[in-house]
Image (tube, rainbow, N blue to C red):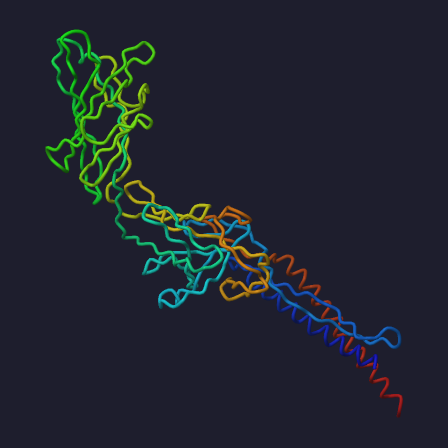
Length: 432
């Protein structure tokens, strides 16, 4: 009966508008929730009457879905491990209970989080979500991990009490030797230079470098003998080299030849030689043939003008930061920085198809499509912003406007039911 279908349509209208109001109330309640994604209710009409004949109202249905791909504005914070994704992509996280118990962790996704170290050093939010990433090798490089699975991801654990040292493996010597000392009649006094380096255990050692001029009977030899000793092996010469210098107009004062007496051979292409200190081989750069950026022989002064080396003493970790590409860097009080993790960004074809969970986390599903772990800032993904949180995607003004519309629609549907009731009453009153 047509009048009965009108009653059913009115009831359906009340139901769907109640559902829409529930979505609006959820959005407004989470307007201050970091990383919250809006719920949206869509209405769909139902047509059940056949072509021609008496029309029967089909009513309306509602479907609700969360707009996971909709992003809120970013706000700055003072915590270096407050993270937010700027653009496409999601941060991988896991429940802290799974991490601490040691069960197989299930990767969940989120777009923002305030991560801080807990008692075990894990970067964890107040809602007990642990950040996941790929651990780096001791040299800071990231191994090749599978990108279509979360199997390689591990909880990011920061050892704030960690000591670290960086042994010296390379140094460069920029030294000027006095040209006057290689002339006939000079005393032949040696020049000595001590260069500190750091051993494998963080201990401080030194290379003792002695430069002895070759004094001829007549003229000038332009030649020096370089002896290298290691304080970790007292009295042992680990390298001896004869340095010949140019006295021409265009290349005067630069190396013309290096002859190896003992130690590693001199490489003219690189301008370096290898000596074996107590902790292993060390590359010492003395400059290329004809170049003026290494050891030179000019004027009458002995001057170590440029000494550089890698390595550092043992230091304490002071802080960690995450850069835009997702690399987690540990900073030490000795001034060195070490890469310890990489945080990938997870992306899939249909983010809105993921399963929404508590705490603004989501699970990939068949509807979301196959996910892939990208380097942040690479491919379709955005980058990671530290010292930042993503605010709620709720627009309160828009939600209040939708609330007014929903209220009016609800009242109108209630009026339809009231009108149908009055019409049925009139039908009943026909027989009296």
